[in-house]
Amino acid sequence: MDKDETRQETVENDTPAADRRDFLKAATLVGGAAAAFGAMGHKFASAQNIQVAQASTPALSDKPWWPHPKWGKDDQAGASNWITPAKVLDAAKWIKDGKIYRIGRVYESGMPKFGERAFALRIPGTPTGGPFGANKLIYHDDYLATEVGQTGTQFDGLAHIGIQMGKDGDMNEMRYYNGVTEFEMASAYGMKKLGIEHVKPFFTRGHLFDIEAVKGKMMEAGEEIKVADLRAAMQKQNMKEEDIKEGDAVFFNTGWGKLWMKNNDKFNGGEPGIGLEVAKWVADKGCCLTGADQWATEVVPNPDKNLAFVVHGELIAKHGIFNHENLDFTALIADRKYQFVYIFSPAPIKGGTGSNGGPIAVT
Ligand code: UVW
Image 1 (tube, rainbow, N blue to C red):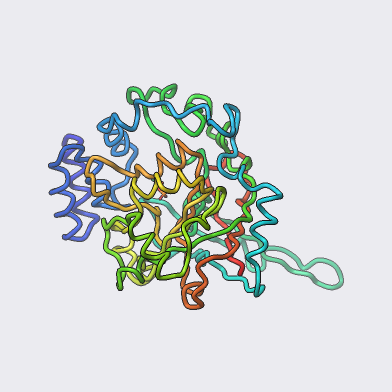
Image 2 (image 1 turned 90 degrees about the vertical axis):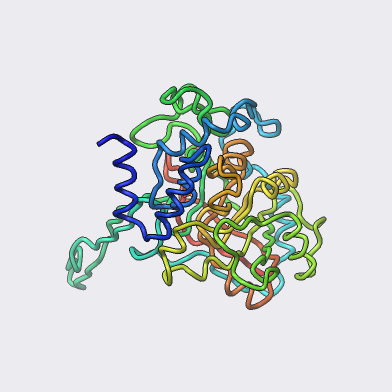
């Protein structure tokens, strides 16, 4: 059996019929692996697919984006550099009623996950230890096996996403933020550069765009949020575009989050989100971070069937702009709170590519 046959069999065994049809149709197009990756969502993710997608999109790979024009050639903190004392004091002015909203999801094994990622929590012994002393103290520990920064509510760091610019396997031409190469970073025990420990904690102004409300319904997989949609949301929500300042964070509600733990297959099978047009708008405004109620913030499959996760590459690798996925804006929207202080400190695991954790919005 050759590689292609193996691939097809995997698809047929693992996926619902509609997804299989999408894959087979998509795979006949130019850049078919990228399209298939999009159409199949998480279930068909493989490094091989991503490489084919990028090799077929030379526009992504012919223009170096380093050294970073503002933060310099040695920077490893990216757009978290915007979070200065002045920025914090300015953001703090938005705290008026002292209300805290959790905007992260609960972590549990049944949550939707990308590809073969896992989340397995074990308590070693019940109780794990004790009793200690005359007071007979007992305790529990946690043992967690997971892609710690890439499951559930997840914050994508700068070591997470790069772009292959040379031949397959050439680690000197796999480039990340600030031009760092795979060769420079590679280590089995944590990335040697761009690890999440370099990212500064966030305390900044957040702006939420409720695109589900603009559309009057949950958006569809593959439906792209355009700048015109953001402007319609701002009008509806009484927000001004000039309010979005350098170093602010922007969030998109698509309605897709309603599928979380209700229909994981559909949630994983694609998603609505931003495309390159909004990514450029975000970069031009100098935002520090994007986030959404779905698993990539960007639209999957991309309407351009040649492209796969192109917004990740543009924002994270090229601009050092972070991405926070699988957020939950339900309570903010119920209270019509579209502008708030976004607070998040990524877990500083040395050499980590991302972070789990409990982001909050404060109004
Ligand atoms: C990939 O890892 C490709 O995507 P995400 O950041 O959405 O998990």
